[in-house]
Length: 556
Image 1 (cartoon, rainbow, N blue to C red):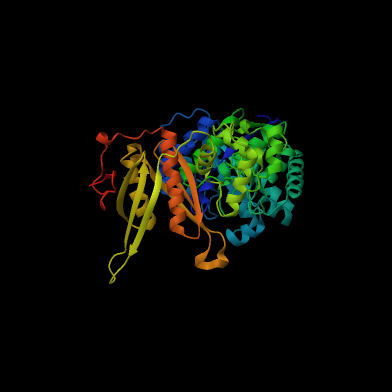
Image 2 (cartoon, rainbow, N blue to C red):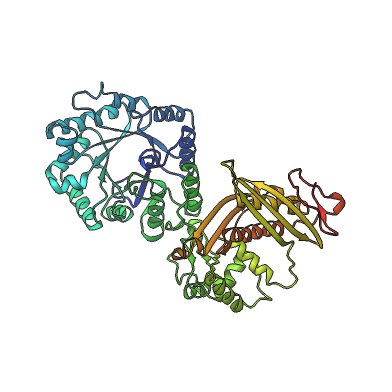
């Protein structure tokens, strides 16, 4: 690739720099899964790790030898040799070459502060270390990339020395020189100025042309902006991580950079043409690293194209570009209208239609006003869209609730230091029949949930597959202390679907019961469950309690 090309190669270091994020830990299997996904996506470079630093990375590169990579060249990462070693005898350098990757990335010091205080070397020793460390893998036939760590701080402190480190790497065979903004504190104009000055200075040498790269960190929340600033003045190799994972505040987010380049500039990112898969890829990696996707992440977040304000929702309904800088579909995302007290009838109607609920026989203005009042009373449909769907469904002509909760009791007891006991009894009515059941639980909400599902499970066996995935409680008016209004959001699943429901009140058990009932009603409606006939009904052994009311069914 010519250094003057408009193609910008993206170099992924999620498996190395990304794993330096606090709380992010990958198994060997995780690393292989992510590497395969990035390869399928079309990345040219995947930095797999630092084989001299830990056994897991050694194992990764060994496993990688048996994988047929379609697009990616794997890179092994490491630092320059120790000042007292030769490259051939330095354990880290030997491990890097032994990884047998087609690409090696070596980082070295550009800042005299690090040379003297961290490496405890002289400036001349550091230049020798850079040259030897680059020459060693180059002589072994590897494509060698040189990362100039702390380059921008080093350049500001002593431009001549920072440039000398690059000349040492280039002279030893590095054909990609990456300028690293390691501390994440530079501004885009500084980055652009220093990258341009560096390229101009080395262009005057009688030496082979190189590809210029950029590697930025996000401590000033400018990693993406700084990367794009470098590209604008000539960088054609950009290093970063998926979703911006990395140490401290993270690395440059390749997800955003890829979308920015392809949608907003004349530069072509490599990989290219895969933007429609960008959201899926981002969330796949988030799932593997076990970090919840950031709903507000640009381009791919769940809220990236969500409109809550009534003015925004109405305008977007008429013209999708009114409050959206790009088409959500271009990056594999979708536009959403958030139903809330801030929204108007357009938000309510369009969100209902997005969820498959036609509002032909419903007044959207009246429904919107009802939602505003309900939210003023503590309910919230953000993050509880199943409750919103049910609200719309209940306002449609002909809808009948599949059950009624007649009454319930929840008891919590602890006596004489014995184990805490929780028990719930519920009485439900389905198709004119009443069932009274009870259940124990490891807490009052668990007991209530179990009793409800046991009672309804007799009529709707499909509910046996429903289980609670998450349970969140939020205090709405903390000044009221233990008498505060409480909002409960429950996430449920039956293995095929996932949904969220909510309840609110000053009594946390009542709020939980409301959310639980919505969850079970939603499950019955969405699965099209029919009431089981009396002679086909079954009961679980744990569904015990009290005598049935007249004409009721009773579990034994």
